[in-house]
Image (cartoon, rainbow, N blue to C red):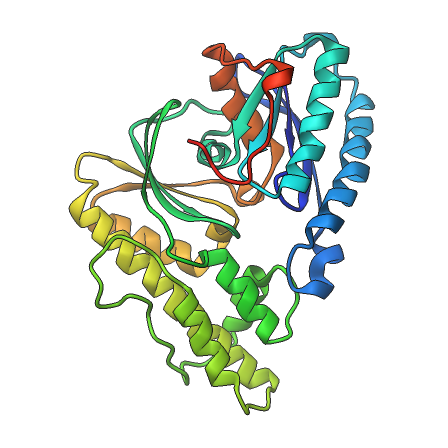
Length: 331
């Protein structure tokens, strides 16, 4: 079995995954949304302190599940990218478990973990194009194997999920912004128009800072009420999703002719309006679309464990003294 730990941002999570058939034997995640909601975003110091409390709590819950710790063949931990003060909490727990259980260490890239959220309890499929949408990243990736993963496009500024969080904060809505904006947009009417970012630019890149600023400028001197907030959420979501679809279309037209599968992963990929639009787009280009289960779209240790099985089979173990952290990805 693989014991996996995820603490890259504000979700504390531990999982146990069986190597032979990828079955998830245990998974628990404790979210910090409530603690960060008053600030409109993640406060790193608070996140770090909560990980120090929640990770041992989950480990105690795991012990009560009668898991035989002698069967743990590897300790996997997210070590990049993410908040340094959050990553370190998981890494320190992994090192402690490595010393106590004498099981080898596996360092796992968080973004690679999101890719493997598509393959929970199943075999992986390659080659694969991936649209990764999260609070910190907006990427188009091509994956040909565990060790051959290439970033094709990224964002010039804010990420898709980050833009939702920041607009929600402008509207004095709670954190995280994605689910509440999606919910409010259902009641909104098409009375407002925001620009679609980079609409006349054919480059394969994303940008959300201009859209975010357009919302900010619109809100100047406006007196908010529930109907207006709903309409703003509708208009913002419509523009943000249109941007994702237009840039994904450019990619599918130019670069992905020989790749059959198009995966969509990351916490922000749970938006159902986005999913409906992506399904339609992939149908137009004869691509088979893959989604991570909604339960495992956001950060979780199950995806880290599934990814770690591949690293384990390749014997990509790391010495404890070489296990460090990085806020940036090193695919």
